[in-house]
Length: 175
Image (cartoon, rainbow, N blue to C red):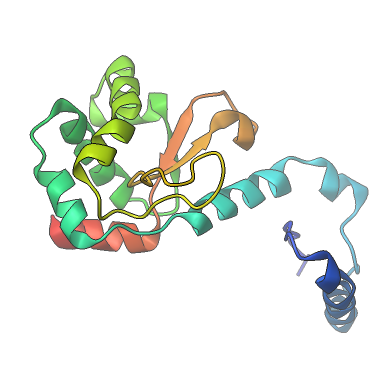
């Protein structure tokens, strides 16, 4: 079985110990102790790291906030509800703006409009959702979906959205 390598950011003070542990375990498996140059050259490891980081930092919303979103009467909340339904069927996957449009029937410009308006809407009506604790978004409400710019995924620069397992579970419970 060939090793599949992933990038793992670690604190500098732990690097030597973790490197030694990986090398030891790889020797026990009879595998190379580090990835080849070819394995490091591809974008897959960087993209995987971006995806894991984005999904890993997203905090689930309380069920009460998700229920308010699902029951919302504004165009913005109606559009977000459709996209939440799509993503909840595929936790851990991401969908580009164009894919969202094709799969939900929401025109691209209307989905972009919903994305522009969701931040102010959340500030006004959702005081109970998690807030970002990192720059440049400190104190801003966390969107109900994981969002990633396409340029970080090494693909066409559109907004990509997805949902965590926990958020999908909560969404399905309130639907």
